[in-house]
Image 1 (tube, helix red, strand yellow):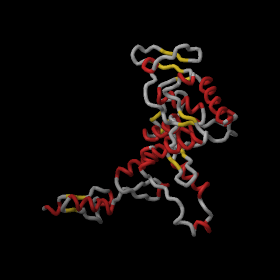
Image 2: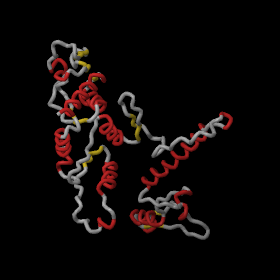
Image 3: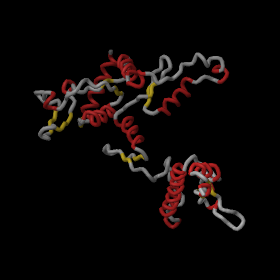
Image 4: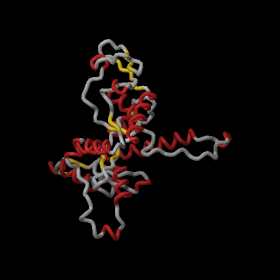
Length: 291
């Protein structure tokens, strides 16, 4: 009796006039039969019977098909008619990954970027709005750094790759990229920043000493929500605890005033005046050029 405890419910195994019902003595035997004879398979014509390792992966894949079909229907409905005189316009560029599922939107003002995962949003925020450049070239005397790994890989290919006939003899001598502790902890970024500062290519974030550089900013007090404005006309500089300028010296470096303003707002919660920051940056660059 136990030998007929389980039966396969797949359509290809259902009993018919020319096919008897198939039984399995154990649940494991039935599962093994299902994985072997009836693996998860996409029935979409463009996939040509593509097989997946489990049903969950197949469901995620079928969801992509559904999204593409919905997107195609939407594009067809929004397509300009010939009567409107827009038939000569170039087609709208398709976004990588499609338009559906972009539920993670950037909260920075005037930034309209949206993403399909929280991880992608976090990377965008760190690179675009905080100015982080954690991917550093490990080649000797280079040290270029990038916000995205693919930009670093492209840089290595273009700047450091050798012709095929030369690289065949120098494979062992080429520097090897490694995720050492310096790169993981940010020490490599600090070393690179110190080198650039010595070469006067970049400048360091002035936080918390904005008053010393007469940079205009607005900060909201955590206690009474009153705004305090510090500018060039201020005769007495507010103390750090009053103005909210509390914390160690910021170690981030920048080459543009725009990036510095974005960083001050996102990290230090300070709204700085564009004219004031640009004036300070220009003064720094002029002084380094004279020296």
